[in-house]
Amino acid sequence: MNAVYPIFKRELRSYFASPLAYVILVVFQIISARFFFLYLQGFLHLQFDPSFQLHRGELNLNNLVVLPYFGTISIVLLLIIPLITMRLIADERKSYTAELLFTSPIKLRSIVLGKFLAALVLLMIMLLLSSLNLFVLTVHGNPDMGAVFSGYLGLLLLGASFLSIGIFASSIAGNQLVAAVITFGILLLLWLVGALSDTESSILGYISLINHFENFGKGIIELKDLAYYLSLIYIGLFLAHTALDSERWR
Amino acid sequence: MVILLKSVYLESPFPLGIGYVNLRILAAMIHVQNVSKQYGDLLAVDNISFQLDKGDVLGFLGPNGAGKTTTMRIITGYMPPTKGKVYVDDVDIFEDPLIAKSHIGYLPENPPLYEDMIVRDYLNFVAEIKQVPGNEKNGRIHYIMDKCGILDVGKRIIGHLSKGYRQRIGIAQALINDPTVLVLDEPTNGLDPKQIIEIRELIKGLSGDRTVILSTHILPEVTMICSKVVIINKGKIALEESLERLTNKVDGIENILLKTRYWGEEIQEKIISLPNVSDIRLGLSNELIIQPKKGTDIREELSELIMQNGWGLLEMRPVAHNLEEIFLRVISSEGD
Image (cartoon, rainbow over all chains, first blue to last red):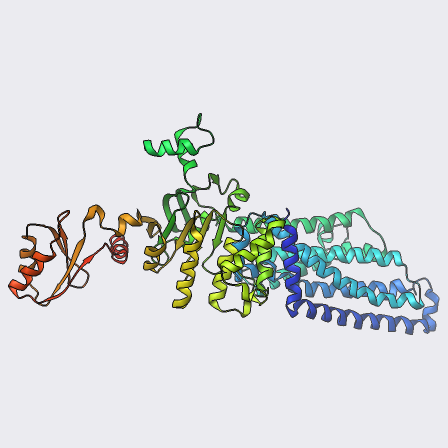
């Protein structure tokens, strides 16, 4: 397993060796900041709306700024993460470096894990940057920081699940573009599948990626949500490992 | 067989209590045992077996699509065979891949380079995943870069380098863990003549007591570097021989190539009736290849005969079995 670190290090450096990581960070930051500003503006307007004074309980920063902001971030992640993961394994094939990796005395899971961790660090940087916007709130208001932190934990888990599915797609796809399309397809399907069910307790509702995020945004960390995301991450990585392993047997 | 057993007996760490089959495996550095590989309907490699000892340099020849790359990929553990076993230094590469792979250095047909990395970082990465110990790593990288002549490009981005440099970086990465087995898939492919000579010299200098498998299309290269030749065609071994036996006059017989201006049946008849000629056949482009009897030199009588009859001698020279000729003969006789 001591090969995880070199793989991780190379992969992370490779993100920042090309403009890709910077472009992703900038685009992500611009979009999320724009929406944050929109939500904040809306909140300020509502404060002076007399009809809204009646529902004082609902007029708080968490409900009107933080929660929609998290919603925006999760959608932007859905769009951007396929671009982060698409090259991870498909690119090794294109540059013939797969032959180097697979003939080196390292385990397949070190390769998958190293790549996953590198993408995870990029995700963390993205989330960290997006949290700068929320600091503006603490200057003049006092949002529920507990809910902010649990929300970020949820975003991290959500993003990590996206990443593991992306790595799987990259391991079965012949090239980057196909990998990105497959990732986006799977993610969208898992996201929208909740809408197909009426009751929250149905299986489809349980499978849905986003249903499990809602609690995190409200400051509730439930075991079933944690278990959902962690098992999704595990399944994605496991499938990627299996795909790589079985490919060589064909 | 007795001799083989004896030498094995001395080398084996377990001189007693191990069966003959095991002992035989222990002797070879690379042991390919009845390996087959099937891709769907296509049988790419068909029951190939060979052995290489320490220090052997194998020229691995065959037309395009004969299964060379597939065989090399199986030997290096990149893909498992459909049937058969591969032992590298007595370790089964698919049962103990981590141990077996640590003995191997592999240069695939396309050098596996990360184009966005600088040369030194790349080699450092390869050293790390090949488990080169941390305290030896820097010394090893420097040594290999020096040996492969890439010290001056150490700080350059790989994607900006020429094909010759890339090929050398490819060889450097294969050597970084000081492998006992070196597998090179067409190492001089696509290089200019000067670079080819440089790479060839490099491989020659590196072989030492390493076991090397070298696939190539350039036949003189094999004569220059290799000690053993395996020719495969359509997935099967068409010929396996040591280079000495192949190209040298086997048993001291040296064939003579003869070209004359006049051409007729009676030439062949008259030549074969010479006392020391044992065989005569037609070469590839209407020349005669004459095989003298063992230990005789027929050149003098032959030229006299030609002069007397006024056939017009154009060319006469001894031919060692030429590798190119052997290659073509083997390939075409196997093909249908």
